[in-house]
Image (cartoon, rainbow, N blue to C red; front, side):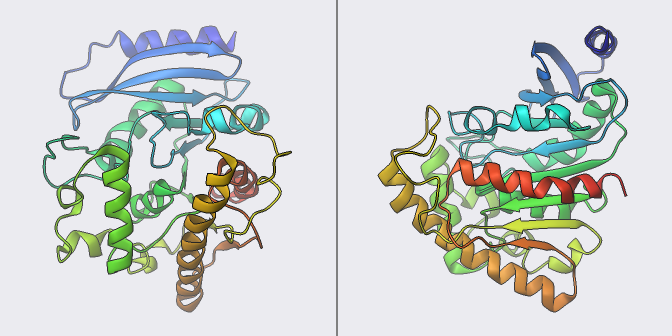
Length: 320
C-alpha cells in the first residue's frame, strides 16, 4: 500500500509539467524493499542528477538524511550502497536517506569558473537550494534534514551547513579535513580534484590566494556551526580489525596492502585535521560528539561503523 501511495505521489509530481527553469523529479523507480532510485533535473547544472534513495516503512512523514559519497561521488564502486550495510542499517529507521550518485572530485561545491574537463559543477546550489524542496514534495517528508559525508565530502558537509544555516539540524563529518585555506590543505584538495576528475581546482575556488579558499574553510568559520548537532570522527591510520586478510571485503575494495599503506597515510592526515577541528570547537564552546578510535584506515568498513555511531546524534537532531 505504501509503495502504491508513493508511486501515486511521484506520478503527481512528474505530471505537474513544471517549468523547465524549476528543479523537478524526472523519474522515481522502486528497486526492491526500501530502495528506490530518483532522478532530479537541476537547473543550476542543466542536467539530470541520479539519486539513490532509502525509504522508511509505514509512509508517515519522516526526516531526510542527505548521505554524500567520497571523492568518487558514487560513480565508481566506492560508494555507500555497494561498500556498506547502509540499506540494511536504515531499514528500521524512520528516515529517508538520499544519496547523489554523482559528484566525482567536485567537493560538492559551486565552482567559480567553467573547467575544460568537468564543466562548472554547481553542487552546493543543487543540494541546498534545489533538491530539498523537490525531495520534500516527492517523498512526503516532514521537512527536517541532516547531512553526512565521508572523506572528500566530510569537508563538504561542514561547508554546506555553514553556507545554509538552518537547513541541516545535524552534521556528521567522517574522516575528512575541516581546513581548506592552509597551503597543506590546498595541496591535498588540488590533488583530490586532479586525480578524481582531471579538473583544475583554480576553477573550483580560484588560485591559492583567492578568498573562496577562506570562505569554504569550516575551521575558520566554525562559530557558524553553533546550534547544529555535530558528529566528527577519524581513525588513527594504524591497521585495525578491518585491515586483515580475514576481514570482510566487498567487490571494488582496494587491495589490502593499498588499504593499509595508502589508506593509513590518508587517515593519519585526516586524524590531524579532526583533532584540530575538535580543539577549535572546544575553544569556542561549541558542543560536538568527537570519536577518535585508536586505529582504522581510510576505508569503508570503518566508515560503516562510524555512520552507525553517528546515527543517534543525527536522529536526535531531527527530532528535538
